[in-house]
Image: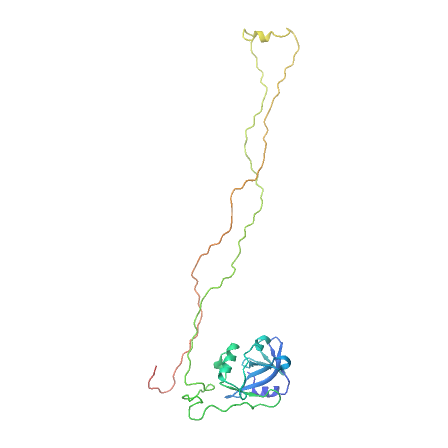
Length: 278
């Protein structure tokens, strides 16, 4: 955390409030101190046109870089912070709660109220409030006892514990793709083919074929021809549909065990105590 001495050094340096990446958010305006500890708790950044508007930024996670205050928030986050009006140079508890909630910080780690100190060279201490304890064990809100670890808020501690919330998140686990390609397969089939051949037949002359045998000259030269035929295999190809293939999805549900550590606050009592009331 930035100390009061460091804020004193910045008060006359004309520095800026900048983001982690070095982006200028605005000039340093006012610094607000915790009324109990006098530690710097808030700084305002001049974000309006020509520095006419100021946005509150918590100093809980801030650090210094030369004359600049570096905060873990970007310019848009700071510019959109809730606009609060300080009454007599102080922020009320409700105002601080709203600001801490906006920045996602725990208000329990902050002071109760914050007063303003000047960040423009006029020195510190203008907005420091009065102490809260009055010496008899009761704070400003008439609480019993006082906090030894920080500013007194009320008479009770809040015990909190973490709860485990388990859910599921859909994410891509893989992809399945149908791809059609062509491959060549050598197919062999057997087909019967018919082939003609000449056969020489001899038959004796008898009464049945005598007339045919004696038709024509008795002695002559002749030729007789027979045409032979044979079959040859013929191959034709045609594309025919054989089946349909498509992709679909189905889901299987399985039990998955998740383990995580959760923290629980416990409260012990030191000292003499007669009874416990609920």
